[in-house]
Amino acid sequence: MPGPLHGSALRIVYFRNFRRLSNPTLGTLYLVATPIGNLEDITLRALRVLKEVPLVAAEDTRVTRTLFRAHDIHTPLASFHEFTSPARRGRLVERLEDGDVALVTDAGTPGVSDPGFPLIRDALSAGHQVVPVPGASSAIAALVASGLPTHAFCFFGFLPRTSAARRRFFTQHATSDETLVVFESPYRVVAALKDLVATLGAERPVAVGRELTKRFEEIFRGTAADALAHFEQHPPRGEFTLVIGGPSASVPGAAA
Image (cartoon, rainbow, N blue to C red; front, side, top):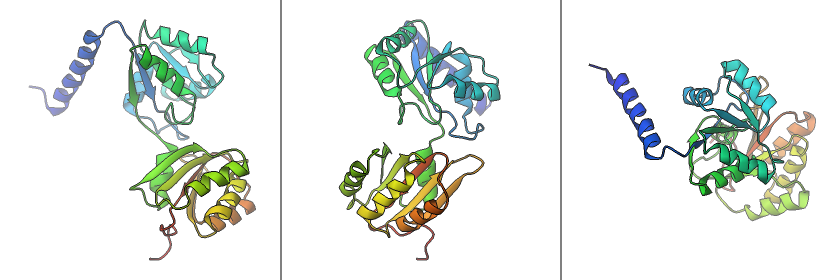
């Protein structure tokens, strides 16, 4: 008599086989989340999928090979990035006629601030199943560790590149109580904080995550003015995630 674990495993296998038999000619596109820095931050399911699929489409095959070496994965890789032509994207969709394909980005979840969306859309249009394999997310990691409200938030990807566009963006969200989560380049983070102070005010509460899950991880919590002063004194390096509280939010870590 199998125990609970064996029974659960049998039910999972049955579900997977049923899906195959119900539509045996179409492959599945798996959206596999990969670590955002620490190579241990990957799920058992993600490792299994990456080992079992016939092909993995990667934003940068050099980055993905590092992950593969760490976890003894030998699946063939194909390059898929923001400069991939529509014709090459079409060939990847055609590969789904012959079997499953996993899509990975350099870090985090495919389709979030990366070039995965067109492939996902085309796979769905061609009748393929698209299955998420969730995992690490720098946006969620920064949000939950920020000390700012998490009950309602908006994620906007990377901030606009120009100061004028950034100020318009901040102005549009000036009165919203939703917490904002955005990405920013280390080369523009100081300029972005200056625009934030100019439009939302020096006292707006923020948390700035840098190099999350990596050796030099840092989360700076304070006012927008405090964050600006900190990163003007400490030249920004690495990947940045900004979490910006609404006008009624309190500064993270401040006494109530």
